[in-house]
Image (tube, rainbow, N blue to C red):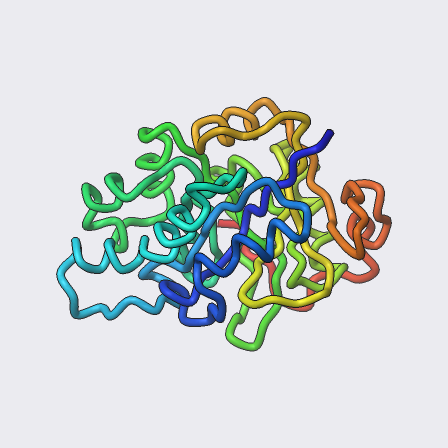
Length: 251
């Protein structure tokens, strides 16, 4: 039996680009065969829906509200809801797996920290940093920034990316020899392909998820039309058909 977990999900409560409430994700993701989700809303440095003028503790409470609503909605379901953060630096975004609301409250200067300082604090908390969609190209971006020194893992499959961009990310992860993840980067309901991490056992907590990533237990998969396919078995997701269209900067 395999257990599927969504690792990249945005709610309308905290992500300005989100279209679905935390609670409404539960029946939808269950219908797709998932055993759980990780809510990864855009943090204050990115496309966040939380007003900047609020005091820090109120901003954090607002930011975590989508996750909390999803968690409450799943309280009586056989479904796991975990918390994470998608942190934007300068167009390059990282998943901070292993931090929580308490960590955010204690690090009220985190938005002013550089990449290495954020990495240190995440590691001090027992977490990891995963480079999300590293080769993404969008109109609001001007280049691709790669920083291996702070990259514990790489999101090799992002369902919102073009195939060649995912394949370039896969090659990057192989070059670094780091663990790999897959996620949908879901903002709204649709019937297109999704992404997930597949495990042979249930994931009980974020600490469990981080430990499983470090041990390379999970398998990045594509979920589409009732089929679950390991990403490494999909040629177009692992063999680039072209190079990056943006300038690549190694930091």
